[in-house]
Image 1: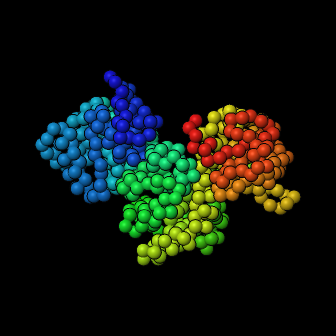
Image 2: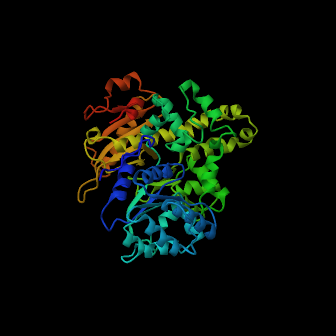
Image 3: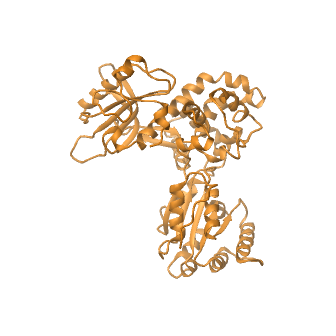
Length: 492
């Protein structure tokens, strides 16, 4: 049997396609259930629909409906797959029994599964019974893919004492496109323009197609105009998308509180205490909102490798950062159609709270995917970090800390310490700061014998730094490594 080939219309997603094909074509009797999740707009439905078409599988997309309505729609879909007629099911046990008889040893894809499980809480248990050794799915040899965008719901399907726990042989999370793939998807060759666009829309494929109808900036000179005619245009779906991303999460009740938490993070208050102080709540008060936002994959928590117990929060969706930092404070102007004034008034905020932090994240992504030769060893962790300087009574911020794998009984190796600047020409002063941090970490017992000092810049390096620096890929124990925008977007 030849393996299904990914259709040309599916951009990138080679890893995801490979995993889905292996699942769909597996002959193992133990491969019966797969879980596919991911935030909305990432192309999950597009990908699974293409898979079902290639293998001749059954595909059903659920809607937010009652159990009776869902069963009716499901019956119509099963009948159509069977070649015609009409099926009217009394309950999900009967519906699944007929489905597996019709599909046989083929593939079943149920998209937006959380809608069905919300209307029919017994459905996961019915699937469990079908997947048991004597169940209808097992007897037929059917492989089942359940897909959903409600991350908190999908996460609970296989957790704790959930009926389907231990039944899945594949768990696939469809994430946004990487920043390099995203630039290709948008057709952008200019690295600086690519960073600016990615800082707003990230790697969400739907924002390129459905939400702006294919409108992409054709040059740096067109960027401001593109912002005005798309994301700041009330007539374009992208305008209210950040609000909808919160509203779609079932666990979110007090929307104002969640926006306040996200606004604090977007404003640079990234610790739990800093967030609480900014919105006038206690750390205990915001524990639940932070957990819900993490479960929904709208924020991430990153541990500081040099300060045990200290973590920072980051917003995972760039469009939400842009909304909280720029659009929310200018909402009155924007709704009145005065986008030009709103955008002109937001330039400094956009650079400092949106592009700057986003560029730092891209530099960490680049470091994480870099070949072992770049930093001299395999990577164990890449994160932002702080180094306490007791002499000057301050903290040194490290934007890109690269650590080697942890090995018991040996000091943790620091492979690299990096400083990032988006719109500032970097100088030898930035290297001196990194050297100071390296010396302090060495005194604390870290292995810094081969630490690479790295400068990441979106605006370039001055003459003195270029004179002592080195390009990526050239080894030197003393020279700082200079990483520019071309390096970030070069294909490894």
